[in-house]
Length: 571
Image (cartoon, rainbow, N blue to C red; front, side):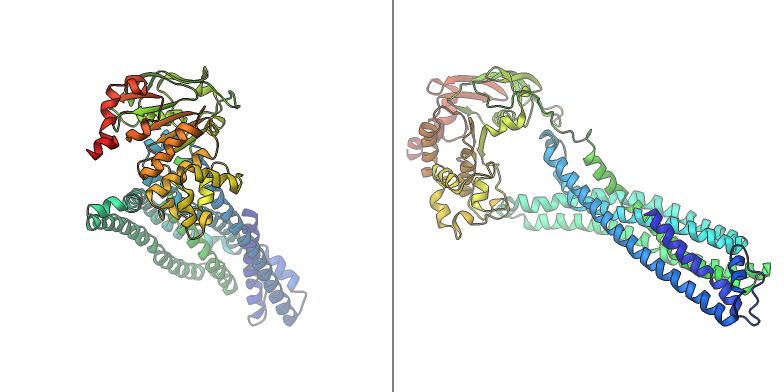
């Protein structure tokens, strides 16, 4: 990039410098004497030809140099575009990889609006910063080349120009400091706006149910207006630069003319110097605007660097232990877990010890917030115990290869979203190589086949973003089919029947009784009919185990489940 910038500017600058002997030739008498520096050698060579030949040779040389400059500049611009787009791609890919590989607790600790802003806005602003950085680089090299050429033409005039450029630098430093502060405010306001956007999508049913559309619109408008006002400050500061540079440029031209008159410099030298100064001015303007642009993007660059910092968003430790199928009972031994971002809160689990028998179904019973979902997240290796140990077949779960372990787990729950694809792609999401027959078998077991057949394109029907074109029950049945198609050794139903009708609940009971024999199954539900199909039960209250054993023997658990019995509902 530097080499291309230097070569392009040198070709243009040398071509402009040849104006000095050209103008001297065109003046009455064609006197080439008094031409300064290296241009005197050109003048001596040209003196060997008559005036007409001299004009043709110098003009031809100027045109050839400008033509070469245009070619080099085009190649350099193409290379710049390739590098720019490549770096933008690499930044976005690195951010995606970071979010996909980072440990689950990271998402519990950080604002999702901030993460969305980094991906959707700051990453593109970093690409813009890359372009500005290259413009800064090319502008700086061009100014160096033109500065050298102007010094060769008249170093005395260059000293005056340098003093005027210093005034521009003082103005620039002041604006850069202001833009740094405004840039930080812009990033903060943009994160707030992203949160309002997420809320409008994620909580759309809640907003409409409670009639809060006007309130949410007012808050969104306030957040958007804050971004508008800060962005206006950025734009206003940026538009001050061109007028200021025009004023400085006019002053420099006038100063050069007055200085040349005082120093009795010949007219061809004055004209050549002014043309060089005129062609250097766009590079000076680009340099100033690039510096100010980078200042306005400073906070976005910091945000991207923050997310890419491995110390901020560490990837979960990869176990080097067994990667083959692991069997045996799952034992929680004095497990405690505290969410790191909930200062002062009670632990989600406190000294929990229990055993999930291999090949048996176990019901996790407890009120909302009792710790059931935390147990599920720990079984899936999303969370690691603050203290205590989880063992599978006597092996510490932390020592088992995480991907191998997760391949043995099937999870279906109310919070497991669908992808923006077809029904078939959603069912086979965890097993992309699955044949259509396997997909259809899984749908049949999950009682999803009938409604899928009625969809416009059957298994090839697009479900839309997060599956919102389907009902809640339909989404959950597809989620159940997605869980069981992998034929896992451990199946977890985390409130998987909340939105499912009674017929599908009976199917899940059938899965527990008939098809999941020999598979370790964990059921989290408030439906008595579903829990009744389990062999064992574990009752959790406030992060502690208060009762466990065969489901039929539980007393505390029975008081939590009985209100959902169908016969009581009929009464």
